[in-house]
Image (tube, helix red, strand yellow):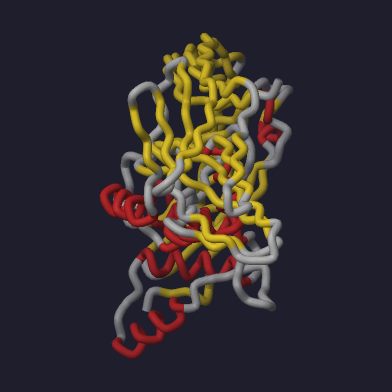
Length: 383
């Protein structure tokens, strides 16, 4: 018997205890939370055979599982021949226009130019470049102080205002020698609630209301989402997604309908709910982190500087207020630390890889400070 289990929500209680043993600072994070899971009992995929010969299957999807797929697609290029980086060529013309008008560059323009240069020279990857642009955009947002190592762009079109919609995969198989039109309406019922699928225009309106409308998200939406009508080419298989309001977390029968003017086809899922109470304790080693220039200036503590330091790695680690918190079981895993700053008319940078375990002095039983040495980029100046 097959089953699909989707994590619906978590109610968590966090407790932080910080203590020091012989000079080594440890943050102990205690989590007590409840998970509620929606479990599709039995066969999760519904099969429909239409009169025109089209075979249709519909499968509920955990929308968070699509994040990495959409990020990969977003980084691709339509060029037939292209390098492994794509940077903002428009910056060149912006800079040229400013030079002609003798305008000084803003801090944001200088940081973007620095990120472009690091990408072009191969010092950072395309993924690190995308993360740097996100940090540049959000560096002044006081509500986003904690940056985890998993920080990435999220262009999942089925996540709006921080919450995922209910997402379903719909697959079409046309075995005939002629194109077949699919224009049936799809709706899903739970108890007495009717959920009709959201149109592309409705989702774009949601983005506008949530201030999340951007090229990447809309491109994924248009390319991945089932339109009101779709022509399936002969001898082909097409895969799309559609979404609805999230289902209620209650044990119930879920009905899926394909509707047209003269006929309705109904298939059914059985939805079960599983609740788990979980308690965990995680230790984090705490390291003081300092970013400074070759001349000894600590740019993170100077009022006239502008920039950021971020970690870019798949490690359970967090950077908050010049302190690096690393899961004690991840101390031997290298972490990339990227620092980009402006100071007066110049920019400074560092692309460093550190292994936290190397900063623990076993003889003196203490953690040494992590010092990030930054260098000035000689080719980028404000004027």
